[in-house]
Image (cartoon, rainbow, N blue to C red; front, side, top):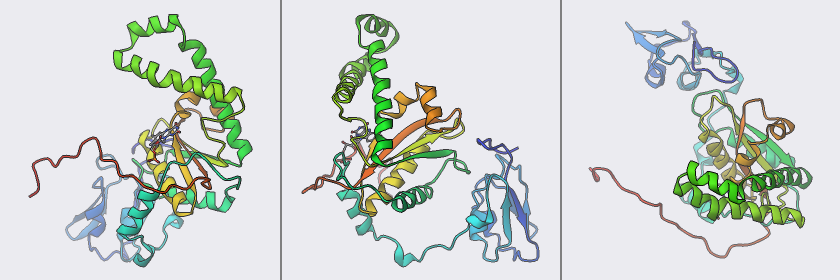
Length: 307
Ligand SMILES: Cc1cc2nc3c(=O)[nH]c(=O)nc-3n(C[C@H](O)[C@H](O)[C@H](O)COP(=O)(O)O)c2cc1C
């Protein structure tokens, strides 16, 4: 048995083509769970060693003679693609320029995002690292303002219900005994005012959730995935979209609200048990920023100094 995922729990199964294997041992060197080892000059696979083969496919990718095929865990040999030429890689300066000039964009031109660009952003995001393969992060894409508006309106309605429950003296009394001071302050100074603004905007036909964006990607995770997987994939999508000339913003206020309304998750086609995480809104920026900004981390320390 391997590490469980939403599609099963089988360990991957590396099949060695003995006629092709030159026993160089590189696959054994890179195999994370130690499933592949060299014994007496021969490559040996023990699928269930440790956590078992996770089908990361590193062995298939380092093998100079294509002597290994990993079966199981939804891995297909067709997933192997040539390594792009190094010349195509962004230089450190180019990548940093993209990152520094990126802003969270909340004002969009009327233009729609072409479907092929959205598909390309999704394909790029799928190259992000995941906890244990295969992907247990999924995406619901909202293409076109009408569909994005529907999601924003549904979210605003959830906020309206939450305010009815939380924004009153009784709920405050309960919170005084059940929540610590930090949580109560966060509620009073952030979540309730945010909710009130979202609901007020919704009432007057505005959208303070998804900012009337022409496209949105909702990243969701299965119970088997680390919830950070959604944010990591979303970050990749954000950078890919930026490179394609789009403006984006990560939206964290919608997912946790939507997660409280199971019928909405079903309506949007999330697999049962999956929870929505971060949402990326995308469109062509209507505002030009004349300056960039560099903000330091809260702290950076080199433990033990520099050798
Ligand atoms: C995890 C996360 C959640 C966010 N959630 C929201 C949100 O719900 N609504 C929003 O308008 N912006 C949201 N943002 C965008 C931030 O507010 C934005 O990054 C910040 O204002 C700094 O702007 P910059 O990205 O242009 O540097 C979120 C960003 C992150 C990383």
